[in-house]
Image (tube, rainbow, N blue to C red):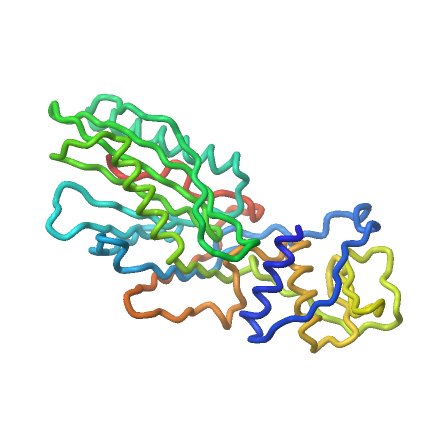
Length: 327
């Protein structure tokens, strides 16, 4: 939780354009006996996620983006194809589609489900069942900040056989700011082992992912009201408090923030930490007024909007499990 709080303070500087001097923050022991006051259940798409912006580089090393493909339903996301000039032996397809919040174990289950889908698709096309290598874990460094969390995922090498030809391939999938980022890379007409193809895809992802910017709006950013504080003692139901030289500046209740100065940066910082603690703030989520990022030269923006459907689910509901490209 401490790293999430520090992340909230960093986000505050980005959102309000000022540094927050938060004093000391402590979680109150009394909060452990309080009922769960997390954000109410909402539709995952159209509620938890309403809009997303994905900004990606047009060039990654020697790879150049050749085009985008949008799928029939927004929840299936968008793919971008990268190729090397003068090399027609293979290309890398990168897929972006909504995931939600997953544990490491759930992410591994998604990766294995993707492999099952790849295996089944090959058999349905009349190909031999592909050889699938060991599913390896990866942790991509995306920031030099000391408390920055790596982007986690998995990579695996595969081998297909078509018309007697051996086709080495690889798949990578990571979870970043509520989105799956999946890569597929196959090499035809080249003498290369699947381990080499896997390593190339892994290196490509290590270069691509730190350059991505993914922002979303919806209930994944749900601000808490800030109320004027009366008195100098936090009540028993407070989740955490903020003080400066033994002076109480504010505290977090399950449904609101109480601050000595509701307009101060400290109050905004406390609100962000309260949003994290009550599951009203998730990675990559921003207020509606910050949804459109700057797009620098050499970058391109994808815009995706979601509408609420019939089903209701918690914010942790994963989307897109088993969706995969052709081998």
